[in-house]
Length: 450
Ligand code: 4AD
Ligand code: MG
Image 1 (cartoon, rainbow, N blue to C red):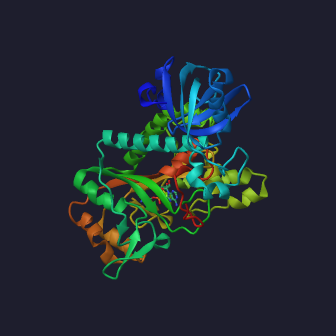
Image 2: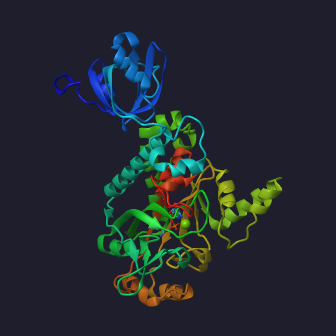
């Protein structure tokens, strides 16, 4: 292939625009099958996957021999004509290949068609990213991130990022990662950008941050990562009801956008049942914690399964565990918003219910099908004395919060916000059980590599 007669380089994602034309594809061999007469070279180029068909009689003997020798994940450049072919795998088009050039051979690629264990795949995450399912999952993630930013940008929220090194805890002191700071003090990796968003909301009215978040949770569950991404909008002059309106509208919008763009591949590649996702429409049931506890008790009374009965044990005041969340959400066909959790199970900054200080103006969104909490938020304590009392009660260091308390000294207003975990949302949308597949390189209790 000399430069002069090389057809234009086209990405597989754009292949439909080139039917009948000769093109050049640059990518990798995903899979190959065929016979001594015809070779089906399944090619991926990062933008998509396509089948390239090469007939023995259409090319030189040498060229056909090259095609037959290609191994999985060898890098290749293919030339051929684009044909519309509904029955072709992947994308409804195929290439009738006239030439293939080997760029670099790959021998003994570790991830093959056979089933591999989770640990093996995670050890090879840097390669596993090339496979089709991972491709869909991470593309859904990218779309969700863009949809989130578009939504917030279009609704008057200004992106004002919070710092990642912080001097204090936001979400409890038990999950802090610390690192020495230059002056001999400890710096902590941010558990949430919220406290800073409260400052930026007082400066800009509506703001959000979107970045990595760190929790030194020593739990090994499928729902927890030690590094995850969270978007945190915050708005001045917003109460809990308005916060729930916002969450609902926001979720319907971002899920709808991702569904419109990826519905087909969610169904065909990930075998995701789209019914639940299509149900993400207003209005989400809003259930007070008091009533949620009653419902869980009723479910517990009804079940014949002794193990589940025990797992569903609950008294007013307890936080929900995943069995509680899973069983409660089974009763609804869309995400639910549980609000008014006991103050004792929530963070120090939560505003208390008027006349019921044991109840907080908090809200969690629980996703259906056992995916659990995807959003946590609520109204913030805007009274200086109450806030100081809570900081003391949580045994936090008052001087660390002097700047935060200033926000209540200088023009305090009711305000609220929420945090949505990207990985939990992607996992739910994609029907992936474990969060580790929803982030490019997961960080968990037992994994810092690759
Ligand atoms: O409920 P959380 O802890 O709330 C906050 O951090 C608030 N400051 C947010 C706010 O109001 N601005 O976390 C919010 C969300 C959870 O609902 C969940 O989706 C996700 O962040 N999340 C995690 N995702 C993965 N791994 C973990 N260890 C997570 N912890 C929380
Ligand atoms: Mg929470």
